[in-house]
Length: 245
Ligand SMILES: O=C(O)CCC(=O)C(=O)O
Image 1: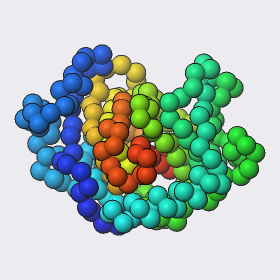
Image 2: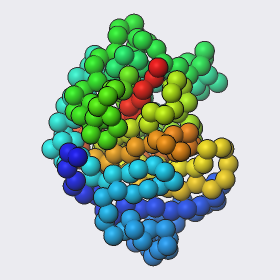
Image 3: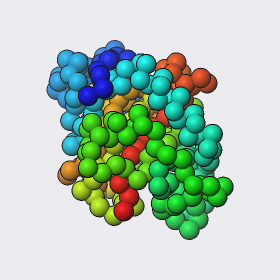
Image 4: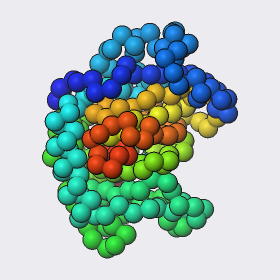
């Protein structure tokens, strides 16, 4: 474990049905008592939460570790600039992304897939050692990830509910690392529809999405722009590390 430091308030969790306006209930001081049953454990400041099988480790990275990681990611983005992917339906995704590792994740009108090269033609840079170290600590030291996808959420960016299913072997978890502004993670089930739960991910939080939850639908509804001072100019970075083939 690299260290535990709480860099934002107590984790917040809510339960609601898709389509309800219950997101409004996530606002304000009344939240913890409104959802008292759901959040009892989380509001006690525990260091690991279980959100439908997603292992959430709040404040896994200390503030200095977060800053060092951002420095390493700057080099990744210099070698492999952020781009705005298009969905196969021809719509621009609101997040900008790039990758490090043997593979990067790309999307265009021919579909979602892993590719050996950046859309500009160059190979992806290596995955920073700080990321590999978190993977070894929480996932495995027998095998490293093939891809570290970097998503950048500027103000207003979001990611719809989806499954991560472009990988060959779902027995490997996806490791997620959040940096910068808080993001509202929504977690559903293994099929579309039904109830979902939401949780604010803060800078330094790490999530392991594996086991029975590996094929769980998840997305990010919105970010609290300006809630963190980690990234100059604001916004949120999320890294997801994946074993691809
Ligand atoms: O931004 C996040 O926390 C989740 C990102 C994600 O779901 C993905 O990249 O597939």
